[in-house]
Every structure is written in C-alpha cells, then in structure tokens.
Image 1 (tube, helix red, strand yellow):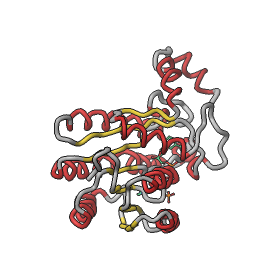
Image 2 (tube, rainbow, N blue to C red):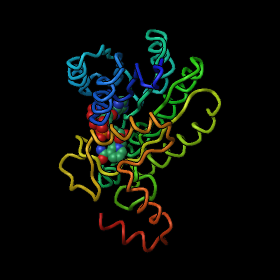
Image 3 (cartoon, rainbow, N blue to C red):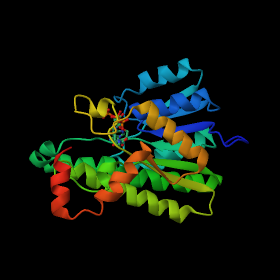
Image 4 (cartoon, rainbow, N blue to C red):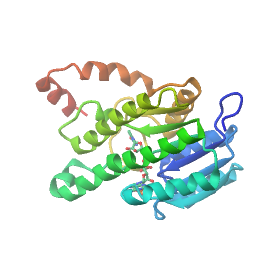
Length: 254
Ligand SMILES: NC(=O)c1ccc[n+]([C@@H]2O[C@H](COP(=O)([O-])OP(=O)(O)OC[C@H]3O[C@@H](n4cnc5c(N)ncnc54)[C@H](OP(=O)(O)O)[C@@H]3O)[C@@H](O)[C@H]2O)c1
C-alpha cells in the first residue's frame, strides 16, 4: 500500500532484466519501496538486477514470466498477487527493438516482436488491471516510445508495436477511471541502454536514470503521460502534423 505521502512500497516489474527497470527500482528502493518482484525470462539478466537492488537493502524475488506465453499470464501474474498481496506499482518494460532489416528478412521475427511488445503486454496488462482493481488501488506503467507517434520507414515494425501499446494504455487508463487504479504511459526518445548499444544516439538522448527520475516524478504527480525527456513533446507535436512526403524526408535524418 502506498504510504501517506503516496510513495510506492512494492513493485512488480514485467521484464525484470531491463536497464530502465533497474534504474526505476534503484530509485524506488532508495525511497520507501522495500519489496521488488522481478518477473522475466530466466536468461534475461534478472540475477544481476536483483543483486544490485539487494545491495540497496530491498527484498527481491524473481519469478518466471514470458511476454509471449500469453496463456500463462493469468496464472503467473495471479500467483504473484496471491503470494505478495498488495502491489502498488506494476512497471512493464519488457520489449525488443529489432531492426527493420531483420524484420524485412524474417517476417516471423516481426510477428514475434509484435507479440512481445504489444500482444504480450496487452494480455499481461489486462490481468494486472483486474488484480489492481480488486485491491482497489495501484498504478500500471507501460513503456511506449516516440517511435510510436509517427512511423518511420526505417523502424515501422517497432514503431507500430509502440503505437498499439500507447493507444491501448490510454484506453485502459480511461476505462479504469474511478476504480482507484491508474495507467501511466511513458514515451521515451533514445535512451542509452543495452537495447540501443552500438547505435548512434538520436537528438535529446537520455539515460535510464533520467527516465527513471521522470517516471517517479510522474507517479508522484499522478500524470497519465510522461515524455522522456519532456522537451520531446514539442517536436513530436509538429511531426504529427507534417504531410507524409515531408515526414519521409525529415525522418530520414535520424
Ligand atoms: N532504450 C531506448 O532507447 C528506449 C526508447 C523508447 C522506449 N523504450 C522501451 O522501454 C522499455 C525498456 O527498454 P530498455 O532500454 O530498458 O531495454 P532492455 O534493457 O533491453 O529491457 C527490455 C527487457 O525486456 C526483456 N524481454 C525481451 N523479450 C521478453 C519476453 N518475451 N518476455 C519477457 N521479457 C522480455 C529483455 O530481455 P533480453 O535482454 O534478454 O531480451 C529485457 O530485459 C522497452 O519496452 C523499450 O521498447 C526504450
């Protein structure tokens, strides 16, 4: 249960090996959060994140969860809620970036990315929403991307998964108004993590720590949408208005 000042005391991370997730949890456990449940594929580097958080004094538990195994979601997530009781925050950073070239070469890989970034998170989020509603409070945080706001020809599979997730998060948030449960959609630009390793940084690139700070600030303020960094909302407002032919040229510049 969030404390009298609204600080998170327990968090479930869906995609427990995420670099941004690690930074979010590190900042939470420096505050009032003492219980962290990392859920993800066993090979996803969760042990390392867990060791990091335990060194900060948190109680950390690991559970197997695969975004693509949608048939298991009700059971796996339900069991976590049954075991740990109240969970204040469910943070869902699971996702893959892939490359447009790889998706073009292998359409099945493109479909798998859709299943991880969108289908799997839709399934998990609906289970989470039900459980948060039953406890009467809680926040679900979904990771969209500025790539979802206007598709680029060089990463439109990834962009379309994020467009879907962003729209889903907004709709779910609206459907939950009045239940005590909130959904916050995060729209980062380029963040320097293992996901973007080796890539040239885009303008206004940022760090996991800065994104985590903005997420926690957004939680405190009850925000529905968080841009990371916030300045990105201005160029993307303009980008959404550009004619297609102009956008094709602008988006080529990275
Ligand atoms: N980094 C950026 O520039 C950026 C920008 C905008 C939005 N985002 C979004 O922010 C979120 C977190 O990104 P990040 O930078 O922290 O990336 P990250 O460190 O690569 O974290 C993503 C996590 O998702 C896990 N994952 C992949 N497939 C999964 C599956 N089937 N089931 C469960 N977990 C799975 C990954 O495991 P593996 O590492 O083993 O694959 C990884 O631990 C992602 O949704 C990403 O799309 C990132």
